[in-house]
Length: 506
Image (cartoon, rainbow, N blue to C red; front, side, top):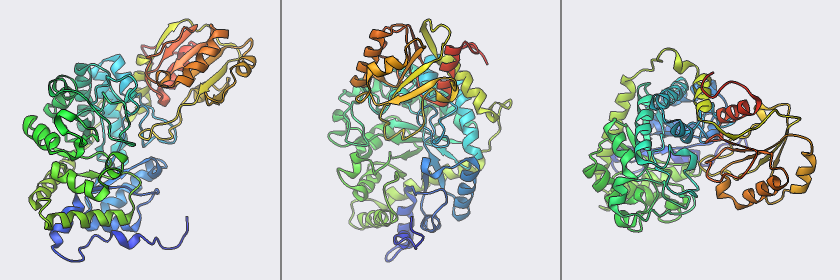
C-alpha cells in the first residue's frame, strides 16, 4: 500500500456540511463500520468523534490479542463505540482467524446437548473478547438448520430441532452476557431453511407463518425471554411475511413481527449491508434508509464499503428524513436503544467463574472431545498418509486454517482439489500405509464424494474424518465425525485416531 495520504480520508468527515448537526449525528450513530488494517485509520477516529455508532472487526483487523486490545483502546479514546465482531467458535472466528478456534462451534455443542457446557464455552469466549476490548459479539447463531444443503449455516447451527436450538441459544446468551459481552442472536427470522447464500443473492424461506412460528422463531422467542441485548436480521425473503423483500428491509418482519408480536425492545442490527442481497438489489445507501424505516437500529457494514461510502450513507439518510421517507423519530428511537446498550456496557464487568474463563483451550478441548464420535475401528496407525480434500470456504468463514496437520506431525499430509486429484496416484502413495481421508461437508460437494468413493473402493480399511456435518457416511473402516473444523475439533479427532485421552475427559 502506498504511504501517500488516503484520498478518501477526508470523505468520512461526518460533521454536517449543511443542515441540522443533530440529525447528521443521529444518522452517523446508526452505522457500525469496518476498515482495513490492524490500526484505526484517522477517518475512523474522526468519524467516531462525529458520532459513528461503532465498528465491526474482521480477521484482517487481528494480529493477536495484545494488538486488538491496543486497537480497541484507541477506538475508545475517540468515543464510546460499539466494538463488535463475529466470534461464534467453530468455523467462524475472528480472534483466531489465522490459527483456527480453540472452541468447537454450535453443531458440536448441539451434538453433546449439555446446556451447561454450552454456557461454559460461551463464557470462556466472552472472557477472550473482554480481554481484547470487544463488547458486542455478533452471535450466537439461532438458526434451525433444516436444509441439509444450506450453504451458509450448516455447522454454525446447534441443530435441526427448534427446541434443542432454543435451549442452547439461551445458554450461549447467558454465557456471553454474564461475562459482560452483549449477545447478538442471528439471523432473524431464520436462515436455516435456505438453499442460497445471502452474501450472493436473496435466499428464500418458503414457509407459511405457522411453520415459521413453530420452527424458525422458537429460538428467537427463547432468546428474547433470556434478555438478549441484540438481534441481527437476515437478508432472507419469507414470501408470506416479507413478500419479495429481504427481512432486513421489511417492516412486517422487524416492526410487526419482532417488535409488536414478539415484544422485543433491544437493539436490532442488520446483517452486513454490503452483502449482495442488499447492495445488489437496492444499493448500499438506499438499503440503509429502508432498513432503518423497517425498524433496524444499527446498520452493519462489511469490509467492502469505503470512507466515501460511509459519508454517502450518512448524507442519504439525512436526505431521506428531509424528503419525508424516514421519520426523524425513528432515528431518535434507534439512538436511544443503542445508548441503553452502551449504558449496559458501562455497568457490567467480567468476573470469571472458578477460573474457567481464563483457560479457553481447556474448555474448548473438553467440549470437542465430548462431541467427536467414532464409528468402526481405526486400529493403530502405520506411517499414516493423509489426504485432506479441499473445500471452498464460505464468505462467512473466510480463509481460516483447518485440517489435522497440527496434531499429526508424523504423517505425510497432502491437500488436494477433488476435481484435480488422481485417485490412483494417491492410492499408490498410500500403499502399505494407514490411509486417512479428511473432508468437510462432503454431502454438499459431489466431487468430494466421488474422490472419497474411489479411494475407499480400493482401500475399504481407510479412515474418513468428516469435519463438517456428518450427513454422508461412506462405508469406511472407521468414520470420525467432529461436527466442525475448528482447531479443537481437529485435535479431538486425532486423539481418537492415536489412542489419546478418552472422549469423556481431559
